[in-house]
Image (tube, rainbow, N blue to C red; front, side, top):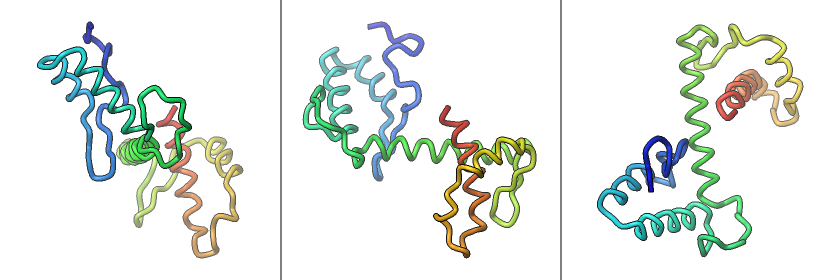
Length: 147
């Protein structure tokens, strides 16, 4: 198997957090490819699939439950990528950061207003109304990061 370029490697999920454990998938695959056999690589990938999907067998047609570890790993990845992007946007002057809150500086109002119109105000108590703009900014940047 040729593993040059992206062949045989994970592009986004190079490191996955599963609870307190962090799996460095590409590093483990590289180690197995260098020192192991093709069968060991295939077994690792099958075991990884079972672990992440919470299935009993790698190719089963079981329904993946929302509690499967892959969902937590993806959520963790997206949350941290969005937070990194927001910090980078503060450095670039697109967002501001004041009193522990992000502030929109240069995101066009039509984009901000679109996300604001989709916001469910019933989710917020009167004490939490200040979180709305934070949630809108997080949604705008999170959507950009995910897409």
